[in-house]
Image 1 (cartoon, one colour):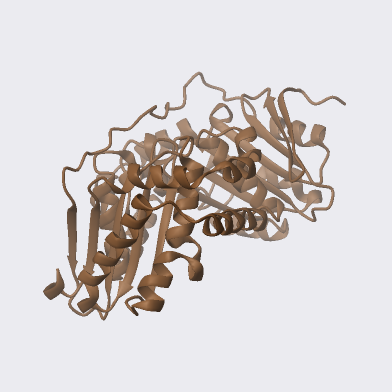
Image 2 (image 1 turned 90 degrees about the vertical axis):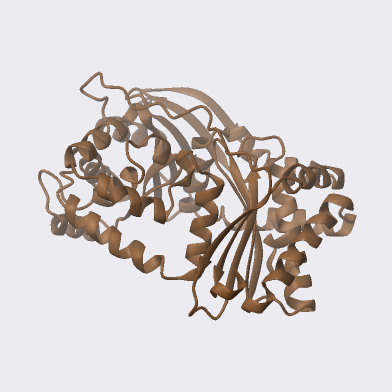
Length: 428
């Protein structure tokens, strides 16, 4: 039987074969056939995440409540059903989307979708108050770690005034405002709707069967209520000079230092060059410049790296080092020197080629399983990229030049930075 869906596009590549389908319940499906896969991977993405929640952290609280009980099953009943189906299922909220991901055997697909549909449509959110208290305890424990305090302060300051700053300290401030389960229920009802959903599916199953089951168990919404529309832009704070965010922790044996800047969104044309710059500076581990210079040569670091995190409407590029507290100023000077080198001097051809090989090698690793493929493809498309963009990544990476990296380094690192430091008060 022909699937009741309109094929919007079909993208073929040597690595992956993915079809984009429009289902009659309003959902979009990324379908990946893999005849050798032993399991099926289901990743359900719902637009919005933290960017559309009525109170900061509400989406995080709701996704924790999804499996705490439904109209027909208790939390224990849900756990028993998951075990009996050999189903692994998890929920999470990110800046741009909420998600439910599952791995299941082919023979359990229909029963698993029935259960997942129940969680998305009939959850009672019954553990609302209890889960709030649990979140407070977990956040307090997390914030006891100096590194987490520094990271929290860095992100909160960098994305101040935007929904991208939902970090642990923001959750602690907003949890007392979540005093009505009705607000959580309204958010739950507005988000988990087929027309707000992207399905990323991979495994050895007939496409027509997969489409039929997703349309059967995730039918069109019965009401005309619309899901909240994610923003099209965010207004990032402009810094006129470096901003220092200190966190005194006198019992800490280390200083934890984050230094970073606003960075391009996932769909920006400089995304690929910035990925290579990150790999060269600190993302490639033992072979990266920060590791070689600050740890190997100068002995300053217990741990040192750089990271680039790109989202739908923005991103962040930052450096991190854990060091003996008296080394704080030397580490910041080391950061400055290595960043300046990238701005002033083109990357040598051999180093650039090695960075490209590193990125493409890691890409092949994180696309090995159907679970990884479904999660990666879904998240990329949810944040604004197309399936074609994903497939073209190797070519885009290969095309980056040393001049591109130098230009991107100047674009990012010539701006004032946010610097968060957690450690003994005498060094702050």
